[in-house]
Every structure is written in structure tokens, then in C-alpha cells.
Length: 263
Image 1 (cartoon, one colour):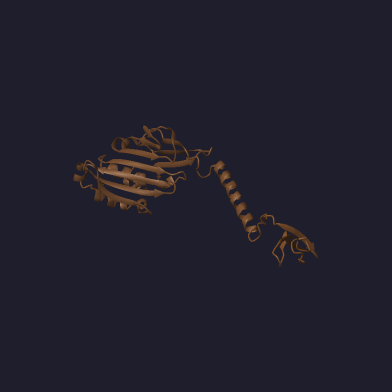
Image 2 (cartoon, helix red, strand yellow; image 1 turned 90 degrees about the vertical axis):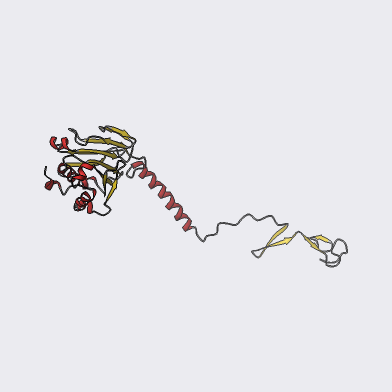
């Protein structure tokens, strides 16, 4: 496995660099995977003093990574730093839409939704060359989009699978439950469609009735009687008052009950 052959592939590039350094570098790989298969890949290199003394510094490693097309992608970053023990570090992060973007001819990384729609899986298979495995130390963390229910990882913490040994005879495997509200869940889609239908129906009814009278409120009863003459309804007062003496009389009376004047 030559450095020239692997240079165009991110995982292969890291292995080739480690081979050139005779295994003097510790590499931590972390994959954060979302439910749609996109995510973020992070490589963290820690350079011990003896390696830096040979001229392999954080600056030179950063320059080497910057020449690779993988780390020229939009959103990719390469940063230098220092570990707690004082060692130089280089951290490279690359966003991806699909894990195949960080696969190579030597290592294939696959993320898939299982047929039941409620689980997802991660697989990493490759050509585990014994010589490479004896010279390189690579650890990997895989953060899944749900609770891990099955894996051959060395340790599991919540939804993160920790592989202390990258090179294994078998594939690296992680299976997790997806969120109840994951996009694509038939029940969620059906419920959302029903809710949208109700909303659109309510809006349509409101628009159709806009401008129409809602109705007349029941009026309070009026003291008096209603007469209908020639199709026109009129309300007659219950009482009338005499213009002469001011006495209250029934509206049906023709003469004042006190002074006798015609009403």
C-alpha cells in the first residue's frame, strides 16, 4: 500500500502518512452521522516531540493535508493546536452529504436505513494489511443519530461507539434506533398529512364565508305591539300620554282617561 496510490483518498492518506512516520503519530477519527446520512468527519493528529524533531511538525502536516482534494472541499478546515501534554496537534474537519465521500479503494464506509424504517446501520470494511496494522494506531468514534442497540465496538456511550482498534479482521459495525420523528416514518407522514388537510380545510371555509353576515343576535323584547299594514311592520308603543294633562293612557285608548281629551 503505497503513499502515492492512497493520496487521493482521505482514510488512505492518513494511513500513508502514518507509514511514512513509522507509526509515531496517534490518530483519532470521529464521525458524526445524521439521520439523512450526512454529517461531519474529524481527524485529530497528535505529534509527539520525537516525531517533531524529525521535521514532521503541525505546520508541515497541515501543508500536506491542504494539498489533498478532500480537504479543499467547501466547509473543510485544518487547524493547528496543542494537546494538554504539550504535543503539537492538527485537527481536520470535513462535512459530507454521504459517507461514500470519505471512502476509498481500501476502506468502504456505508450508512443505511434498515427496511423497518426505525433503525439505521454503519459499516466500515477494508483491506486490513497486517504490516500496516502493526505500525499504525488509529482510534475511531462513531456518533449515530439514535440510541445504539447493537455493535462490535469496544465501548458504547449513549449514541457513540468507541473503537480502540481501527484494524480488525471483521468489519466495524454499529446499529442504532432512529428518532421517533425521523423524516420518512410512515406514521409521522400520515399524521402530518392529516393535520395539513385540516388546516387547509379551515382556511378554505373561513375564506368562503368572508364578508357574509354572521347572523342577527336575538333582540331584547320591545314593550308594545307589532302591527303589519301593507306588508310593513311597525312597532306601536304600549302607552301614550295625553297632550293636555300628561296622563298615561293605553295605546288602544281614543280619549284620555282623566281629562277626556281625544288622544
